Image 1: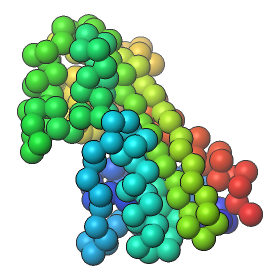
Image 2: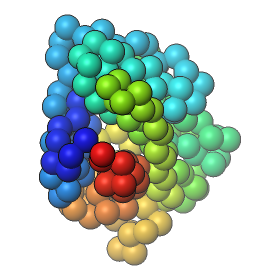
Image 3: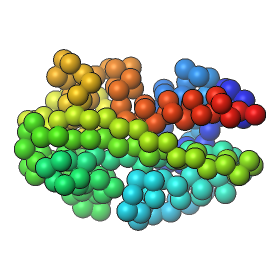
Image 4: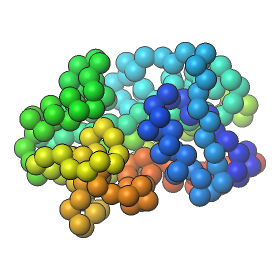
Length: 198
């Protein structure tokens, strides 16, 4: 696949669509959203990879195009790794970002360790390729939400790699992309695509 081609994102999350678009653009790649007529499998896996792989396979199978999908979440040391793969459903199946964040803040002590995890899957049906890339970002839990940017748990996540002590939601897009779990996974994908573009 030549540099500058497009990838299909197997997600209907607009935050992720924008973030992947930003992360892939510097290398000339574009991201196309998934059409409404493609059914996505439920996230029932017990690992991030186990949730991401069926989504990428479903999009690739339905369209014949190279597709990417990710599953990401947050692991709290004080909660023995929870919420993990249930990060989007931590406070219930239809919980909002605010409800999930509130539950985390009430369940784990401020200053305790956190880790963002991303499993990014690439599936190319034409070439019979499947690859998984992982990205991580370590941090600590803020005492209260701060910042208006980002999404999910970003307002309470203070990354270790940000010396200012700001939360992910207080960082600019460029600052967040440089250190985020999703940024790390995309950079691994781009490096691999650069070596396997034949």
